Image (cartoon, rainbow, N blue to C red; front, side, top):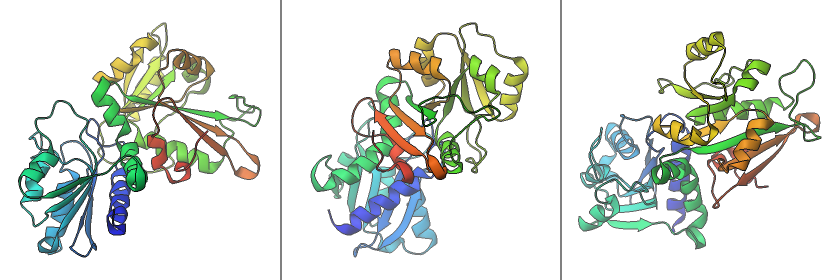
Length: 334
């Protein structure tokens, strides 16, 4: 793979990652257009469902800059669509440009679409390259698979990818010191809010609400503008949640759902169009999620000395996690 293509993939992944948390139930996708010499002309990303896809965003940028006639190569994190939904097929849009060389990070995991964009592009004269998961292309393809992991899981199962975020002190306790609600650093708090912004739902419990009255909304960073309401899933066996808290959560922009059966939680969230959910709760719910294998990756943040925390990540199956889209977590493993 030429260095210019690798650079273009990184640019496309980074652009797509900026919109993770706003695109559900669509996947986050990035597209880079290059000229014949490998110079980047434009980088587009899908912003949210119903808006132009990444390929169209990049094409429109080129057109506005008067550079479309120089477009030669398209680098896309996900196979261009070849069907009409709320927007037209991106394979057709690419064929309407001078692009005749297309690099694809991951084939479309959606089993319900008719016909693949890669095949359609090949049939109409394009050279199409799909990255291999091993060898020199493996690292770049892993970036694309990390970006797509929640959507790919959602397409296979109809259920969301579930991330557990667990904060611990140096002794392994989840209980903050008296008078505080956390013991992690400011940098870890910022990371937690960026994670909330990237997910479609937050999962908590009635006991966590009673103990901490948590906001669970995005505050330390700017949330995605005009995104669909984020789901707040409250797990409680009794089905009872303080009415004032529920109203306040709705006022903060949440679509609240109450779950009385933890086993039904993935289906409940999937039916709401949630592709990626994050658990923010105490040890009792984490134990139940562990016992039922409902988690897909697990981020442990352990408070360190001098404001430097330690991060570790477990992945239940496979080798990719959307957590690796975050720079401070890109190389973190258990």
